Image (tube, rainbow, N blue to C red; front, side, top):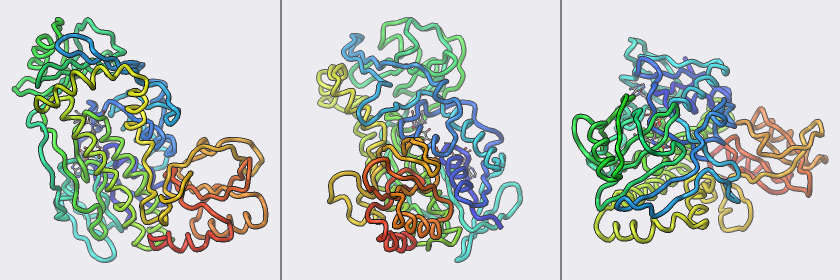
Length: 485
Ligand SMILES: Cc1cc2nc3c(=O)[nH]c(=O)nc-3n(C[C@H](O)[C@H](O)[C@H](O)COP(=O)(O)OP(=O)(O)OC[C@H]3O[C@@H](n4cnc5c(N)ncnc54)[C@H](O)[C@@H]3O)c2cc1C
């Protein structure tokens, strides 16, 4: 018997497994693939994704090895019309995201999983499930039936777990055929710029990847995506291209789909198994990491008997609206970039592309794509706090100076490591509050605010759980245990 089986060792499954082990669960993580993927789909960690890996202790050297991409250049009819500066901080995004490959992100997460004592069981597909009131029998292609308390399906867009539980995945295709090729090529272009050429209802993007590889992407069809994209590249950009090596190529359909529910009894869904959308906004991997971040500590509390199953319903209540927003935004973005209709093309070419030069546009795009604005204020654990001003339960916690128990001065965000953090004054009421929280939630970190008498409990996923007077925390802890405060 194991507490949790995680199906799928992509970014979502690996982050979930790390978070679950950090929360005290026993975990088996299985993947149908024979070995880790060496090719990459996502080529960027948003600021939120970096924060999640930081808290899980899984950032490794991703930051220092990230690509130094500084600009996105947009060309309309071969003419440069707008240049967006990327990777620069804003007031919200102090530490911008990292351009890197999904394969490297997965590698860093696997390293962390190993440090935590876990390991991926490759060539082991989930093929059948038998859920009941107390657990799930998980049948694998290795001929084993694993008895688990819970099954988390992180097995991607074609999720077997989702299909076996009969959960609907309604949605629509956005682009019938989209081509991708990661190539080594002689290109007369700087490797620290993303280039996008737009011409009527056609587009092609050239994205720098590590090791001098370029990713070519655009709508189209054909058996040889690399050759088709090279031809489209020359036609739309007017530049020569000579392919020397194709690392990976693929043809796929861009769709938007959202699972009807994220939990069916003891089976949960996360990542692409629960939502898929256009890759153009660079949000998919980051949204999956966010799901794992939100789910792991909740499942940890339930497995430890510190919360009732009702807490798990807050996972869907908090995360599904986020996926809905991401789906809408990435759909609008895909339609704009691809030039879906004459009016959209006019807006794209005459309005949107030239505006990329403006600092305001840069700030809006950097902030929106960072995922740092995500808040669970309207969720069941925030007690209607969205009506009030300032930092409230549900919000991503802002940084603040504080002192650790040994008196060292630091800042709160530097301390976050997938544990609960209680910020309370070092007085008897604060000490009683700390004892109460430790009794209910287990391993917590206690710090004191450097200024004022702030009392606040920060969840392992870096969002404010509770804020108020230390003697009043009991009611919130009772509510947390039932998933409604
Ligand atoms: C071209 C492209 C570009 C993209 N660019 C970006 C980007 O820039 N930024 C971004 O954030 N996102 C991007 N995405 C999206 C991103 O790649 C996905 O959202 C991300 O991979 C989802 O991670 P996941 O772990 O949920 O699923 P996956 O990465 O699909 O992992 C699922 C895992 O489950 C395994 N599996 C499947 N079936 C079973 C089974 N029955 N049993 C056990 N294991 C199973 C698979 O082998 C796989 O390892 C892009 C996607 C594409 C296609």
